Length: 340
Image 1: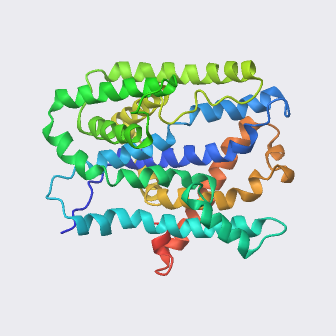
Image 2: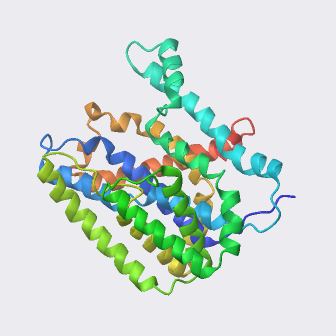
């Protein structure tokens, strides 16, 4: 029997914020590599917004942990595969083909042979830049059934110890210290437990998590500028998804949304709850809207005078257009499965 996931409004807020942040990261993507090509203040605007939004992907994983690890009914493989795993895998495969077609025919000498080559290489390289997420996210569905009994039976103190060990591992990963545990499935699985823990408990160190997140944001902003100047080019040192600074920021955003989301006006709540239903579709679809924008030859960013204005406005426009397109696809039975 299917068990509906518990609906909590702050999860809707997190979904919308994470989707907006992902769109922003992809809007500013082409500008990051333009150090010494565009004016420094224009480049810094893009890099600093990038530094402020790297928590987006971790939040999506934490949401999955918060929702899926709450399950306490007996595990049924068929139900889990058909109602959880396939719901993500099939759209991923379909969109991989769609983007392979776009990539294969987008060049001047586009051809079916190009499309086939892109698909053949998809085992190691996603057919479009944003689909990398599913290469790490889908394997987590095969970890979740084993984490469920762990989080419910290990006890509060053991879970805290596990999280402390994981936080230490994210620091080790950030500092690029070699260890066999520095693998994606371990580092991303920590976000599942972290999301569940923050959803199910009010951490006694909540204030310290907020302060840690704020300090990490400051470190991201100042460090991204300093390291890039030192390197004489874009530095991704503060941009990792599996590093302690990003963990702290993601945790801060999670608990702040949990605590304060209910204070939003009822009208805004309704809009957020509705948009959150389409967050996965927005994630899958929005790069299509971005194709003409990210082409620097079109000069779209220049229309706004400064990237501090261009990036937020374009992010909002792309988000809204992607939302509308996702709604249209979800309204037709023949395409609904593309945007679950």
